[in-house]
Image (tube, rainbow, N blue to C red):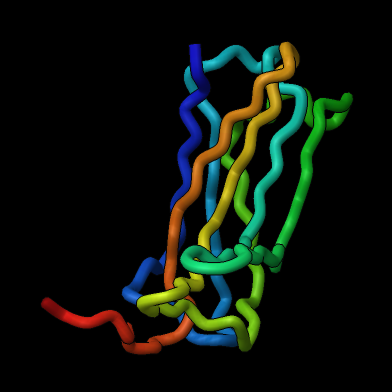
Amino acid sequence: MEPLISIQIQDIRPYFNPGDLIECDYQIDAIPANEIQAVEASVVWYTEGKGDEDMGVHYFERRVLSDDENDLRQWRRFTTTLPNSPLSFDGELIQVCWCVRVRAFLKQGKEYCFEHPFRLGNVESSRAVS
């Protein structure tokens, strides 16, 4: 059975400005607690389109099973201040995308990932409207 990964961005809006706080909650469900070895939560940007693709990690946390944390499925919250760049962009040749990403690593070696996209900045699209 595949785990169900939920991500909620608090105060969701059409876009966040540089310097805004982004507050996110996440949890993993539909899998026994003892099956999860580690969970990573991050805020990342990446490019898509022509040419080389790039990626940057703005925020990162990794949680592992321990005596203090014996159930990685529980709701967890993190907050981070968004950077000045790169801003979200939808161009004809390249797109800059931002997301909150949660990855669950299971004991048998499988990995599951879920992303919740958001926009940083209010840059207009340069794509032609047809």
